[in-house]
Image 1 (spheres, helix red, strand yellow):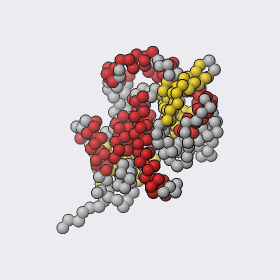
Image 2: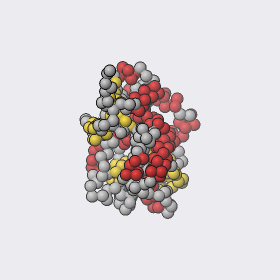
Image 3: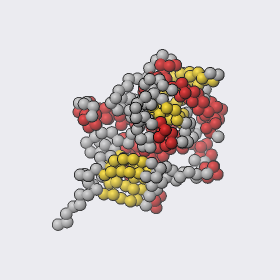
Image 4: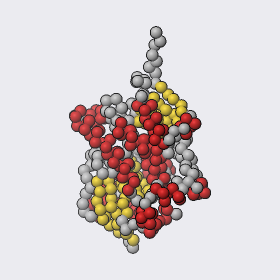
Length: 222
Length: 125
């Protein structure tokens, strides 16, 4: 995308806001289903506001509508980040209701309803991308990171020139391999964490302030 | 009487054909072919933005009895220089394979290799 295209696509006021920095950063938590996005959102909120974002489950697509909390302040020594945090439904290219029945024992009716809502959730997640200033992309450190969904999300954010921070989650699991994840996406910062236990989340907050604060967003645009 | 073939249809689509489509037409073409049970290998794949739109359209088309979505795998886009970006030259997408999720399964993907398996038993409609 050329400079002229950027100006054509965005309203003048938005461009000015981008140049001088927003007061708040709107940060989206993105990723495939079941990687721990809501667990991470709950961890962030619990640590900085005492609140939670939503329920978690081992059944994929537990979060089927985007949820958000505003005015969350993360302090990191001398600097801080004030953000609106959006927890998005997992993005996937396929949803088979039979998986909910056969793997997780849901009834046919519940499985169909869950699958239908999940498709709507994916669409909602994609639409939120238009309105986001930065993304924490959550990946499961026990899984192959080089999936098309991860590649597509990263490519999309790179095309929009948005800052990305990869959270390599589930580092507490025995078969976790954050090194694989780092080597798959060397162009972006990767922080190994356990959203469940809170392991290394201090480092994640540090990186969030650095990458999503006004300075970080300006640096990214250069 | 000619016996109807029931094998899985595997179409290699040239970049000349794809370049003849607008972005919208390209996505409509791909989704129609995939919904009809064909696996497509695109010589020049989709940009990340087009892929995201394809996922969005796929979700709207999912019918839980006949179409559960797509499987897709492609190599990363070619890098462009700073000068090219200034003049609006976008990254070129590379070869991509797209098929119906009930037929095509992505086994492993890396920078140099896309491994897939085809689930036998269900051919083109």
